Picture 1: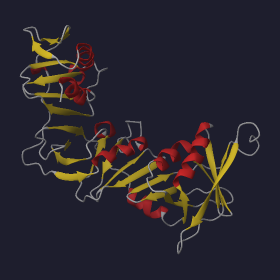
Picture 2 (picture 1 turned 45 degrees about the vertical axis):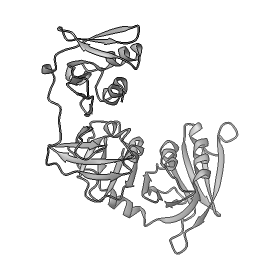
Picture 3 (picture 1 turned 45 degrees about the horizontal axis):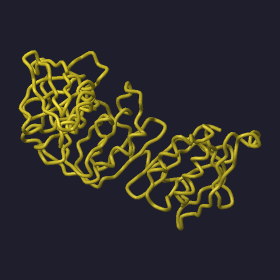
Picture 4 (picture 1 turned 90 degrees about the vertical axis):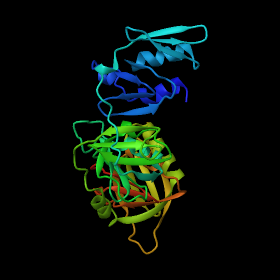
Amino acid sequence: MSILDSVKAVAGFADETSPVIQWSHVVFDKGELWAQGPKGGALVKTPGLNISVAVPAKKLLKALQAVGEESKLEVEKNYRLTIQGEGSTARVEGVKIGDMPTFHRPASDAEWLFVPGLDRVASLDWCVSADETRRHLSGIHFNPDGSVEATNGHAMMRLDLGVRGFPDVIAPAPVLRGLPAEGWLAKAGGKLFIASQKGGTEGFRVANLHEAAFPPAGQIIQGAKDQGQMIVNREAVVKLLKRAKLSNAEVTLAVAQGRLTAEVDGERQQSLFGFVSSVPYRNVEGQKEVPEGRIGFSAALLLPMFGLVTSEEVTVYLSPSETGGLDPLMMIDGPLTGIVMPYRL
């Protein structure tokens, strides 16, 4: 890994806008490079780079990109970092690493859990609340049953990774982006550590955990299963919802005569800029049928949920009514479950 790639791997965890240097700087520490912010941090090994200095993340990236991939780094006595390339030189003012806090590391006796499909955790990111004061909603929950879950209060996603024994924790979503296809997890000292190799010997990420209780997703899913079931074509539903989202409007789903119809902006305005589109569906043999009726949802919530479906067909649980249903829509596609709450018509 080049110096530039190493810096890119950790710089995203620094808070470049923070006036606190402990959060806005990356640290070179004799063969290691790390950065940490309020949500967590990352450490990578840089063998052969035996320097010690902390420099602003944003300025360092800009200097390295200007000089080029093949760079030589040296630290001057005043903690200025000199970056020497072929025909160009850049300098970044730094501070001594003694001014930086200790980087959190996993304990030597930490219990590591192997997790396949770790890169899929970030697919739930869209469902995380942006309101960081709601600690139980602003992260991704690792459930001991082997699933990861996220909710913003209007939609909920659950992905079963098939690994039992997860620590029961909520981790900030940004720390979980760009994870490897498989890796290792360990909870130690109130932190969640994530690594490509067991023990984090070649580097790792650390997440500052949210101290909150996640909503009972299992109970919500079980309750939604009492509704009628239908099977629809994923591609057809996604096209229908994309059209709805273009109007930046809520969508009313109507069930009648074997078709699922999306009404946007209402019948009154249809001649101007509304539309009605529909797709066929079929009932699930031996299961409760979806009743005919109408129910309203946000197309902006339904679209990313159905966009994660990989199967050609998907099972949908729904309870429309003549006056407008008030139960959530739930879809299940193998290990993936999604729920969206309706609005009152």
